[in-house]
Image (cartoon, rainbow, N blue to C red; front, side, top):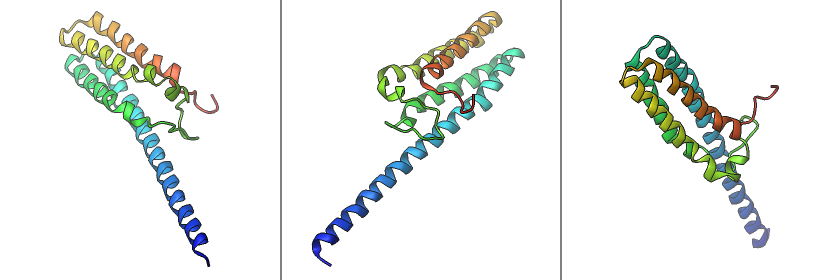
Length: 151
């Protein structure tokens, strides 16, 4: 076998390893962000709504802190082009990156306003700020998340 074919073979193997590593990294990011968002909804948001109904102001503050921490991690979980059949992320995320990356900050501001209302034990303002937080989340979802398949 000639050296030329050995070099071609080595190049193909290296390239396939690189591509496999990229695909794995993207699938890992997709899984991590899906888990973060599911946790955000299931463990944090549902408990937050319950705490608001029960007027449990300290618990509201705790749950809001969890949302803010999740928003701090969010952008890093969207490496360029990380889409797959399992992902509901729209391509617009990377086409409108500057717009997309503003959303976690908007959610954090809304969450902080809710925490402040809870700290003040202002029931009416807590309800207003909870709705504003939901709107902030939904604005991003409407722009950058595809509907569930079959919906």
